[in-house]
Length: 280
Image (cartoon, rainbow, N blue to C red):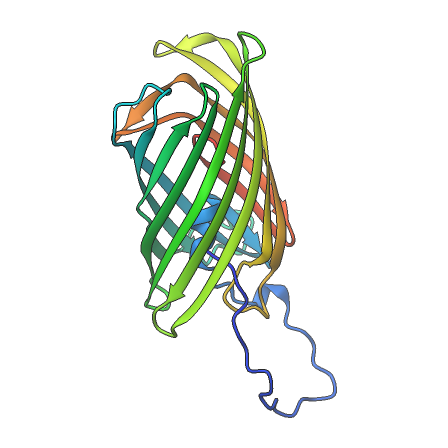
């Protein structure tokens, strides 16, 4: 459940044992899915389906403004994302979406600098470093990421709000037990089209939006640690809806202005994604 990408190194000249003349490939359902850590820290919450198995990732993206911010001055933010992963989903239609095994827990604190170039255009460089624990393999993993978000906003009239976001990320994972390291790079582009619905809840204007997002992995995202059973992903595509408020709510010191629900597809990976704020 949690995370990342990169093909594990294999010996080039290892002598293979004798093989029978014909070997039937193992059915996809029999392949074990051992998902990597950085995958979840980069891609966020969702129910991911790979090879007929499913993993669930819940990403709680808490953050705290370190300075008083009116939106027009630079600001530092403390990032406190927490990721929880589950696996071993049910095999029948009724229980297939219910998590059965608590698998991973990771914490990736970091810092973000919000620089408003103008009232509608912002640069947001960030970096995170943290640890994760795999309860299935009793293994500790360390990982870090650095990146840049570029955000823009247009308001063509009083009811429509259009946002765009580009994100560039490099992330690295280190498995302590076998001293293996893997990494990924990500280029992400998203657009959100939001409309005010004309009524209020809790004194805040309510809005509904639709969004689209494209994620490209220049060195391919390998969903699992076993590359033979893994899926090499070049591109993922996501589309969904959001519902929320013009003015953000504050919970546990962290602000958010909407929730989202989306569908992700790409290279053998299917996912139902969800979370707070936008996914980009």
